Every structure is written in C-alpha cells, then in structure tokens.
Length: 346
Image (cartoon, rainbow, N blue to C red; front, side, top):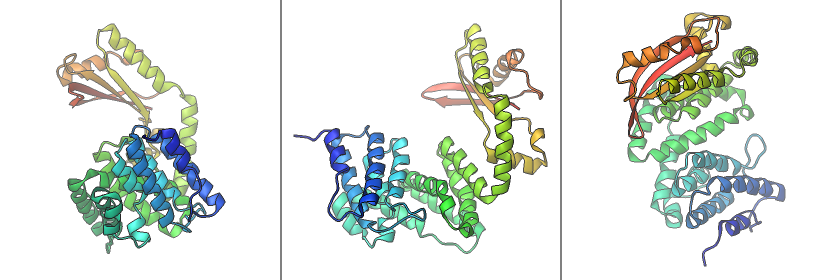
C-alpha cells in the first residue's frame, strides 16, 4: 500500500542512524519539514525520492557547518525550497538538495547516477562544473560565465534555475561571510546572475539579487537610501492600491477590462538613476511604476493605448511631479495579445 504524505513527513523528521548531534539534527529536520510543505504538488513517489536525496545529502554533509554556525544541510534545503517556489520537478528538487555533494564530499557522478538516476546526476554535475569556473579578471569572468551559462541552459534550463536559487540564498546569508568576499561575490551577482534571472522572467529574483548586491557593495549608501525610501513610503503607503483601483474603475466604465500592475522601484534602481543622472533622492521622479495590460482587441495600436491611459490622469492621485506615460507595445501572454502602457510617478 502506498504511503500517505503524512506518513512520509513523520519518517522525514524521525532521527536516523549516522545523523549529527541532536540540536543540529532537529534544525535540519525542521528545515526539511518546511520544504515538505512546499512540495505538496509532487506525488507520493516523487516525495519519497526527495526524501532519499535529503538523507543522502544530510549524511554527505555530516559535521559540516555554515559560517553562521548552522548545519550545512540547511543551505541545500533552502535552495530546494526556492526551487519548489518555482514548482520545479522532483529531479530538480533532488539536485538542489545534493548540489554540493560532488564538489565537497568526494561522491562521484557514477555513484550518484546509480542511486538516483542519470537525470539527477547530470543536473548536479552541471552545477558542479559551473561552480568550478575560475577566471583571471572581471571582464573575462563576465563574458565566459555568460557563455557557460547559456550553454548549460541549452542543455537543461533547470541547471540555471537551481544555480540562481543557490546564489540567491548565498546572497541572503552574505552577512555571515568575511567582508573581503563581499565585493567579488556581489559584483558577480549583479553582472551575471541578476541579468540571467531577468532574461528568464524571474522578476522577483532579479530585483532581489540587484538589491542584495547593492547592499553589500555599498552598505552605507544602502542604509541611507533605505531610510529615505521608508520616509517616502510612510507618506504614500496606499498609493499603489489607490492608483490600481482608480485605473481599473475608469477602464471598466469604458467597458475595457485590464490587468493593472504596480510596484515600488528597487533601491538599486533608484540609486542607479541617482548615480547616472547626478540626482539627489528628492529629485528622483519615479519611485513607483505601473503597467496597464489591455487586451489588444480593446486597443489595437499604441496610439489608442496611450490615449486611453492619458484620459485617466485627472483621476489619479495628485503628485508633486508629472506622470510619465509610455507605451511598451504589445505582447502575447497566455495566448492573448496584450497592449502595455507604463506609468511612473514619484
């Protein structure tokens, strides 16, 4: 009889021979229990395979610790959790859990293939090869890394996704690393990994990697800008929701039904604009960005889209600076053509 997910969960959190100390083992089990909740989209057989990969990785990293003092296995579990957020398959989750095993623990690809299949072994091997890339200077680093990344993507895009998850967690925990490594890793993240996340459509990861890179490249500027943005945010804490509501209502009155997206610009984006245009924070005129997605059948060309959006300006919240409208053309999403209009305000 097939085991239920509850039974598998209980087995996962149970002590096992060869495990590390009680406190460490409890921390690892708790981390994996949280991962298990994220992978409930997998079937019981796949979850059982993930469990085996977790046991294998846990034993392979036995006694290894992170710079923070946490058991090392909590890092692969966190990477697997990010992959689960993207709903990657069981092989990718397993590879995420074991992504450092070939490099750090003396396990061969053949041994891994015999236990978990060649598909998982190929993913882990691809990640290991990317990790071993070394270059003489930043320019060569950037160019060669892009080339290697693209080659890996051509073979299996899951390698890149797992690597992005790995880099994201490493950047989140960068504070535990020696300061001497902050600049190199942050520059690499900003120059290589953030743009790849953007090209893959992982906007949230792209924005997070940019901000984390900025935080560790320019700690003082990051703290100063954070305080300034917090003050501006308190003054307009409901601006995004009000704009979205007003725009949707106005469009509905014209029998046009659209999707309105609004967000605050990242600290990195704000700082980059200040740096390139030599502006003070008070001179930045677009802290918020909005996008109106209208079916192309409602507005068939860029001129009509802009005209429709322009008619909404009197309805939008007052701002000390003017609203800047720009049409981004059309794009096919979910089999439907959408016309995009961007709107920025301070």
